[in-house]
Image (cartoon, rainbow, N blue to C red; front, side, top):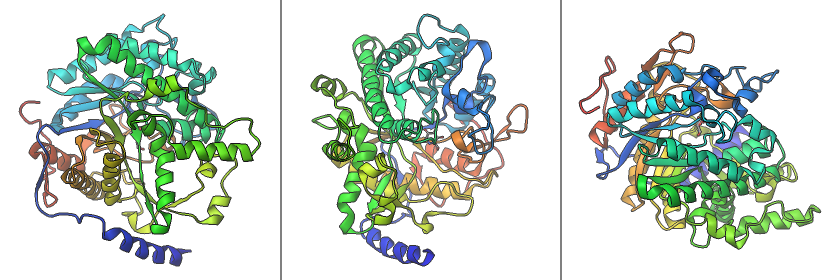
Amino acid sequence: MFLKRIVLSLFCFHVVLGKTPEIREDVRKFPDGFLFGVASASYQVEGAWDEDGKSESIWDHDTHKIPSPIDDMSTGDIADDSYHLYKRDVEMVREMGVDFYRISLSWTRIMPTSFPDKINQAGVDYYNNLINELLKHNIKPMITLFHWDMPQKLQEMGGWTNPNIVDWYGDYVRTAYELFGDRVKYWITINEPTQICLYGYGLNLLAPRLNIPGVADYLCSKNLLLAHARAYHIYDEEFRASQGGNISITLSAQWYEPESELYATASREYLQFDSGVYAHPIFSKEGDWPSIVKEKVARKSAEQGFARSRLPDFTPEEIEYVRGTSDFFGLNHYSSYFVNMDEDTINSYAVPSRADDIGVNVFKLNEWVLSEFSSTDYVPWGFYKLLNYFREEYDNPPIFITENGFGTYYTGLDDDERVTYYRGYIGAVLDAIDDGTNIIGYTAWCLMDNFEWTKGYTVRYGIYHVDFESPNRTRTPRKSAFVYKEIVRTRSLDIGFEPDTSVMTIDEGH
Ligand code: NOJ
């Protein structure tokens, strides 16, 4: 098996090399107006899970289960305690010198009943304070309206599988625009639909862990797209003229490289089932699900004895309602895979399931693992290919990279592997820009270590280390923070730059 992987990887490496730009040693500049930022998300950093009137979200519910489904049995009850320490967070954002800070709102902190009948003023105050603190220092807030922490009460009524979610979510986002839209110019409706629907509804990898494969995940996808479109239209029709902001969705997308030319179709189809399920309805000229997804799920559903396709149809009105609902293409990217048609693996997939519907094998290479501490694979050329693929597939939309970063089991400050990762991936962004791909911003995930969902605190993504043992959750910059700061300061990538990590300062203007 090991030998097979080595032989394979040599072969694959050869296939890939010819098409991929080399890592460049020269100092490379970003275009004028390019935006740099850092990100976090409410449940992962805020803590204060039941403080000041906040109600329960699905992540509060999930992490309080006994036995715990979280790797280290931890919770986000306190997390980074950003609810109380947000001023230190803003100080760190200022140290980085970035243009924006991407945060998310907790629905249950603002609307404890889930509905607009009761607005929790303490929750509103928290976000006002955070937003105003950022603006005071010339940092733009970018706000994600939904980063996975669905109100538990709505989940009990089906969450994203209940079509009423479109109204409920619409009411929530309207309130958010009313409360904060005078100061917020970048909105993300929903973060990573694939993870929400596939991992949360089709599998049991994320809350609410429904684990109803090939059925609940597709229902979730349809309602989620309609809810996104509702949020876009409400903004467009009721707020855009007075508030003048930008709004879109953030998709998580990885690259799927064919192991050889034999698997070019497998790669294309996998991409359509993965990012395409959300990108095609919004960003393609014709809208609707990708046709290969419709065909494959309908055929399998019929063979399996279902009365109709497990993939719910969009009506012509719904197709129009969703099509074009974006001001930019929000993209989270972490890593890549190879694809082939290995029959043993394909035959082992659950029936029904999305994996079985696609009918393709995905795998990784040993050489992508930087060390035993890495939890993210290092494949910068995959990012380059993905960015150029979106340019070609969706008519060169403005791509805003809303997350990219490196997870590790290593917790220390000398995070050379994270530095390698950022340099490689930011270089890939520059390569894609050189090819004419319209990339307008880049966001490092994450500002600081935090609650990494089912991994708890075992995996760290922060460019700042957080000491979860200390009562004030002490934050300390890692080497990667100094390197990222220099990229932002010079608006350029110099892979030879060695930072002085002895002292972190705030530069003028921030
Ligand atoms: C994407 C998610 O949006 C974020 O919440 C998560 O922490 C990172 N990926 C890393 O897994």
